[in-house]
Every structure is written in structure tokens, then in C-alpha cells.
Length: 277
Length: 299
Image 1 (tube, each protein chain N blue to C red):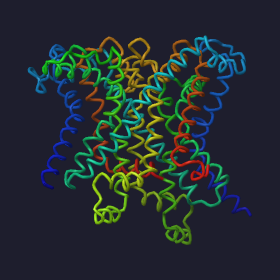
Image 2: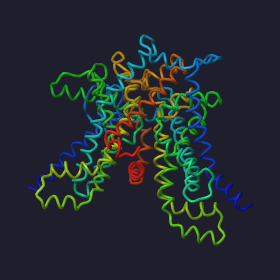
Image 3: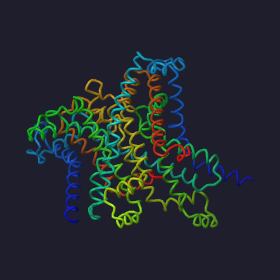
Image 4: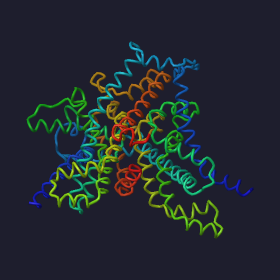
């Protein structure tokens, strides 16, 4: 009785998993089909005439005349640089808020940062565009990076970790003559590798996957990120070139899927820690 | 007192870089947005005359263009919120319960499967589903044809356009809610269930009288975050249905951005964005109050 029930549940879970994975498998399968076969309305997962042409053209830049490699490079660079900045400035701020008792305006700052977590993005989107426009920074890498540095999520996540760090170790270091920077960089940071990895994955995926801001903040083809580029192509005249589109989406998804699968444990922890305070 | 002054300064230096970014890319835009909304801010024009509350008044007076796009967008968004949020909660909780009763060894695997679409960007998600829902060549209609069922215009006819938007939203984001629910379920003390079992409680009554009350705060969190996310919906209708058929799935955020970038009326668009943000915050507070009541919340 128990065994049958368990088997049925596993069966149910497998069917649902198939539904979740099917679009991804179909994407990969279609990326190996020529456009004719991709539009044939068949349901074959194994292409009848498998081709890597979609990928070859894509990576050589010939595919639909769009610089896919450049887009991927943009996305990866912006994601990595943005994440590095966020990790540095968020950890410094969280250190000051959690460990430095003489920080001026500490309570005001903390209250402002926490309150900002409740502000919907729609409130800042247009004025941010106008701000970057006024600064002449639309269509630059700055526009693709800087807006992501203002989020308080990382400060809050790291604050929670730093505040629980044992005071004794810090005091011992202070007696040995360590200054604040040394305490931050030699004691606190090495002890926070895992939470920093968590925040790093979260931040990288957020920047890499965002598409609305890059869509409006870039204007020339070579400045697009891969997500904004794909969004434009899906709206343009390539809508039904499914084989080629799927090769592009597969290439675009690969980096983030690798980060996600490798860092899933950390990612889950970030969600649960930040979610249920 | 020199050391103390120095110490305060060095402490401030640690907080300075982030605080600057916060001020420039969060605080300033909020104030600037308010300023823009009080002006006739035509994007390409050199002069932006002060118009007071005119932009807001136009949105709230019947018969104006602004009033009609705002209300139509709000209505589309409201429908999306009403359809999607209950499902985002129920399916998220359902998947969490399912994953939690699976044998330990395969639990992580299934959790990953259900969570994986969450890692994909909005535009990739949209392109995949454009192909899945394609009326002539799409996977889903091909399957329906094999089964001898009439094909469905998934993205070009109502109510199917809504069904497609909700389905893709569930596929794409449900993993997030599931993870939060799994965590909440694991925090319910095991003794409660054991005590209930001794008393002969059924699976259903354990769920209704132990599980649900224990995860109430998390339920509220998921409800609020899902409502906010659904209220901000953009990518799905923008890329999948393009607001169609007609304007039926043209949600509020699409209208706000059209007002800003197609009609170039940034002042009026900013006013719309501010009202939209206020609506989102009011709805969150109402949901909080309805769950906890005035006294308990202490707000």
C-alpha cells in the first residue's frame, strides 16, 4: 500500500518534470534543425537532418547579421564587473553597519536601505533613463552596470551574516593592532566566502538575465546584451527562423544555466534567507 | 579626541561607496521622477515647463487619452494578477508538498528540474514559448493535431492569450515560490505531525490544521511578492502576445513605457509610474493587514 502510493507520487513528479523540461529539450533539439524542418510542425526530438549550421553561423557572426559573440561578451563582462562591484561595496557597507559602532548616521542609513527593498522598480525606471540620458551615458557600459549597484539586497544579506560573527575574534585582532581594513579584508571576508558566493551568483544571474533596462539603455547593435538582442530579434523579422533563434537562445542560456546548476545550493539559500526574515 | 574623529571618518569611508551608488541610482531617481511628473516633459524638447499636477489630473479625468490608456492597462494588469497569483501560490505549494514526500535521494533532482526555468532570462523564455505556442508549427498545436483536436490560436485570441501568458509565467517563475514553500514546510516541527498521528488525524486534517497555520507568514510573503511581480508583468505580454489580440493583454507597464518612449511624454509617463508604484505598495500593505489584522501587525 505504502509502496504503491510512493510509486504513484514518483510517477506524478516525473510527469510534471517532463512538462518543465520539455520546452528546454525542444529548444536544444530545434537548434540542431534547419529552418525548414523547424517549421514543419513535427514533434521529433531527434532532428531528421541534424545540422550545426545554426551554431556555426551564429558564432561566426553571419547569423542574421547580428553580432551574437559581441552580445554574449557584453553580457558576460557586464555581469562579471557588476557582480564584482556589488560584492565589494555591499560587503564594505554591511561591515560598517554590522561591526563599526561609530559609523555616523548608522540607524538612518540602515532604515533607508531596508525601506528601499520595498520600492517597486517601476518608480525608478524612467527617471534613471533620463538621468543616464542627461549624463550622456545611454548606450555605454556604465549604463549597463551602474543601476545594479544601488540594490540593498546584498547589503542586507551580508549584514545578517556579519552581525552574527563572533565578536571575540575581531577583538583579539584589534588587540594585535589590526586596523578596520585588516579586520574586514583578512578576517571577515575569508570567513564569508560562501555567503559571498551566494550573493555573487544571485547578482550575476540578475544582471545577466535582465532585459528591459538593457533594451532601453542601449541603442546600437554592438552595445546590446544577449537578452536585449534576443528580445529585439524575437520582435523583428526573424520571428519564425526557429532553428537559428533556438541556437541563439541555447548559447545565451548556457552560461547562466551552468552558474545556476553549480551554484544552486547557494542560490536556494539566498532566496530562503532573504525571503523569510 | 582626534582618534575618535579619525575613527568615525574611516568607518564612514567603508559605507561611502555603496551609499553613493544608493543615492545616485535609487534616491535621486525617485526624486527626479517626482520632479519630471510635475512638468510637461516632452523627451526631445529643450524646454520642460512646470505644469503642477496636470499630468496626474489628466490620468484621473475621464475622456483624456492618458485616462483611457491608464485604465485599460490597469484592467489588463488586474486580470493578470487575479488569474496568476492564486495559481502561483497554489501550484508553488503543491510542488513543494510533492517534492517533500519524494524519497530523499531523488528529492534534490526534482527540485532542480522544477526550479530550472527560473534561471532563464525573460527574453529566452519568451522566444522558447513563441515557438511552443506557434499556431501552425508550434509543438503544442502539433500535439493537439496528433490527438485529433482542433488547433488553438494560443497567442492571438482570447481567452487563449491569457491562458498562454499565465502558463508561461507559471513555468518560468513557480520554482521560486516552490523553494520558499519547501523551506517553510521543513521548519514545521515534526512533533506536531507525530502528535496528530497518535490522535488519528488524516493527511488532509494535518495539512489544514498544522501545515497551513504554521506556514502562514511564508504564505503572506509569497502572496505579496507574487502580487508585486505579477503587477509588474511586462516581458510575457510584450514579447509573446505584443499586447494583443487588440489591446486585451496590453498591461499597464507596457502602456507606461509606450507613453514614455513612443509618445515621448516622459512627464505623463512618470506620473503613471508613480501612481502604479503607489498602487503596488498599497496592495502589499492591504494584503499584510488582511492576513494579520490591525492589532497583531502593530503597524
